[in-house]
Amino acid sequence: MWKDYIRKVVPYTPGEQPKNRKVIKLNTNENPYPPTPKVAKALEDFNKDCLRLYPDPTASALTKTLADYHGVDEDEVFVGVGSDDVIAMAFLTFFNSDKPILFPDITYSFYSVWADLYRIPYERPALDKDFKLVKEDYYKENGGIIFPNPNAPTSLAVSLDFIEDILKHNQDSLVIVDEAYIDFGGDSALALLNKYENLLVIRTFSKSRSMAGMRIGYAIGNKFLIKALNDVKYSYNSYTMNQTSLVFGKESVLDDNYFKETVDKIVATREHAKKRFEELGFTCLDSKANFLFVTHKCVPAKQIFTQLKENGIFVRYFDSPRIDNYLRVTIGTDEEMEALYKFLERYVVNA
Image 1: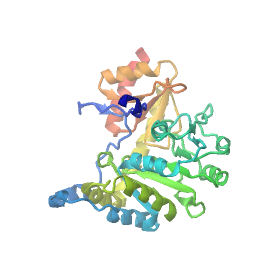
Image 2 (image 1 turned 90 degrees about the vertical axis):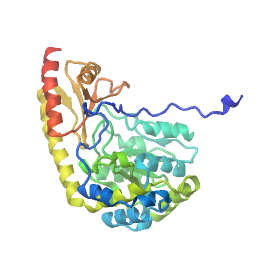
Image 3 (image 1 turned 120 degrees about the horizontal axis):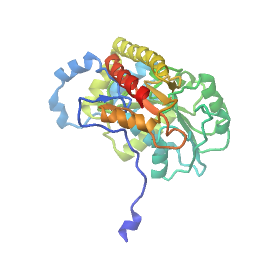
Image 4 (image 1 turned 90 degrees about the horizontal axis):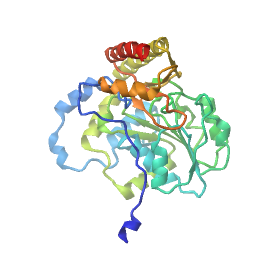
């Protein structure tokens, strides 16, 4: 009978992590460039003896650095093990109503997994025919709202006015804006924090800061929200951030010039990639992220995905309604993207 009491959920399926490192990996939206050289220097100087000690449960050094960087108070910042950890903690902390939470039907698929895991009712308003959010769908009664900006996997961003309109219509609900890709385009909802106490903004070091392997995420919101998150965290696992992540994360934030240079390179490659894909017969959404969402006018997406993989180029394919003829392509280095174009020039013409 004990089997009857196991919590059963359909888990999130992450992008494939090929064992062969010689492939061109454009499937999980990682940054193709290394983190700031200051991280490498911190690794050389790292006091390994501290690994035998528990890390600072308040993550004070990283929290203060992030607070200074964003011009907020330290008690308005919460850090966690990647933005996944932060979002999961937010679900557990804030989404406890009998009313359904709302998030788009085509979006980060982990949202529905967390909702099922924590037994949170939810509804998924459909994106319109152009894969855009419909703000009026978020005017109805709800137990909370979350959406990424830019959205994933569509890559499209909404305006600050759009976000503020949703906040104005949901004064009694928490609105979470997941800004995993905001550094590559779009306007951050951080500008609205002083006006709306029901807003929580979540970010990650995995994309623009080239530190997916370190697992660092954070949230910024008013002091009441951050205290609530910390209360749940300390009731669940006090020592979430490891010693190395705390040190390397701080160094990453302090090197703002390198951060901006890397982001600018990716954006430039992305804009060039849009033109190249269109020349090859693809329709490409107007991405504001570090990836493109594309579909070909003749060749099925799954067929292209399979052929690319067999030739050592990994992109992401979603076998889901409405998007099963699209590919999500991470922006790599210029050299990696040129290899992709050359293959597509041969394949889509001859397929």
